[in-house]
Image 1 (cartoon, rainbow, N blue to C red):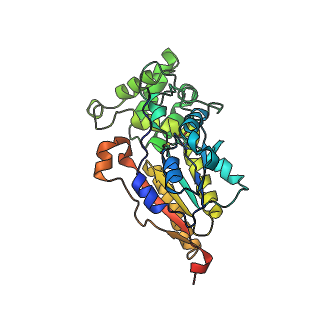
Image 2 (cartoon, protein in one colour; image 1 turned 30 degrees about the horizontal axis):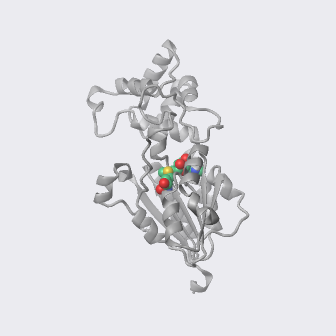
Image 3 (spheres, helix red, strand yellow; image 1 turned 90 degrees about the vertical axis):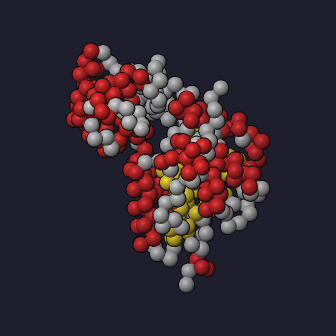
Length: 301
Ligand SMILES: C[S@@+](CC[C@H](N)C(=O)[O-])C[C@H]1O[C@@H](n2cnc3c(N)ncnc32)[C@H](O)[C@@H]1O
C-alpha cells in the first residue's frame, strides 16, 4: 500500500493561517491527499474548503479521504493558477499553496518521478498535458538541455550531463527513469557521485519543473492570489527549493512596498520545519513557509 503523504509544517500552517471569521472560505490550491485541508475542516466546523489539484489521481484519492466532509468540501481538478485567474467566486479568507509533488507521486504514480527502474519518464502531473520528460530528454538540443538542467536544477555539472544524455540517446531513446538516473550518475565526476543527495536529484527536479511549467505557474499565482483575498485574508506558500522561495519572497516584498498598509508580510524570514519534523518527515527538510496578509481597511490608519 502507498503511504499517505505526511503534511509539511502542519503546526505552523494552522498557527499562521487562521481565518478571521467562523464561516471562512479556505482554498487549498495544492490539495494532494488533503492532509492540510482535513486539518482546516476539523479545526473550523463552519468553514468551507475548496481543494484544487492538477492531478486527477490525487483528486480521486483526496475525494475518498475527505468523503465524510462532502457538505463543506468542494473539489476542483485543474491548475490553481488557471483556476484563480478565472475565479468569480467569493473572496477566500485563506489560500494555501504547498508546492511540489506528494509521496504518492514518488512511490506509487509510476510516472518516473523517482529513480526506480521500469518507470516511464513521464513526470506530468496533468496526464493530458503536452510534452513529458522523455520528450524533452530525447529531443532538446544539447545546449538547451544543459541550460534547462542548470536553470531549473541549479546543477553545476549540467553541461557534462547534457553531453552524456545526447551520447546515450543516440544508442537508443531514454524512456526509463532508472536509465536516466544512471546516465546522470556516470556523467558527474566520481567524487560527486555519492553525496548526501542522489547525484540525479537536481536533473530530475529540473525536468519536473520544465514539464509542469512550475515556475511560470507560481509567478502567475503570485500575480493573482493576493488580489483575491478577502479583507483580513491570508496567503501562505510552502516552497521546497530556492528558485520557488526567491519568487515568493520577491513577490511578497513587492506587494508590501507597492501597497504598504494593504498587504503585510507576516514572515519577515521564512518559517522552516523544526529539527524534530526534519527527523520524523525528511522530505520536509527543505521547506520554507511564507505568509502575507491582506489588511482589513478598518485597520489601516
Ligand atoms: C506537496 S503535495 C500537497 C500535499 C497536501 N498539502 C497534504 O498535506 O496532503 C502538492 C500537490 O499539489 C499539486 N500541484 C502542484 N502544483 C500545482 C498547481 N500549480 N496547481 C494545481 N495543483 C498543483 C500536485 O499534484 C500535488 O498533489
